Image 1 (cartoon, rainbow, N blue to C red):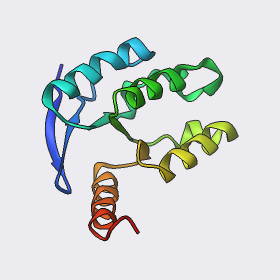
Image 2 (tube, rainbow, N blue to C red; image 1 turned 90 degrees about the vertical axis):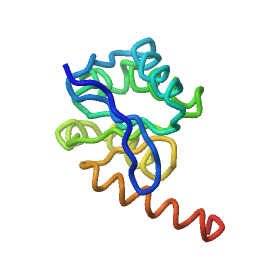
Image 3 (cartoon, one colour; image 1 turned 180 degrees about the vertical axis):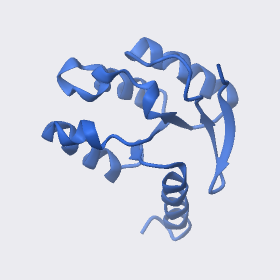
Length: 132
């Protein structure tokens, strides 16, 4: 099993979770990742999509809500990296959830780490420009 590592993306230090780490099936599992992030003093967690239980993508299960709420409570940003098009294609509610999440700064769904790095770069430029 690989280990989680610290990475720097567009000047932001983040905890990059190992793809083959434990699956996150709910809020309690998220707490383990949150503890690791806080221990490293980062405010961004990069989580491979394969670490999320399939129930995360069925919103009525409440798994996504429980996981995301844990990150919000601890003021940690979460970036889910990987292809979720299959899940989104089967659920209008999930598609809407992803669109709304990607409009904000707390939770992002991106296909690649390069896409995440570009979003972080743009966010940093906005902050440097006074938030405009």
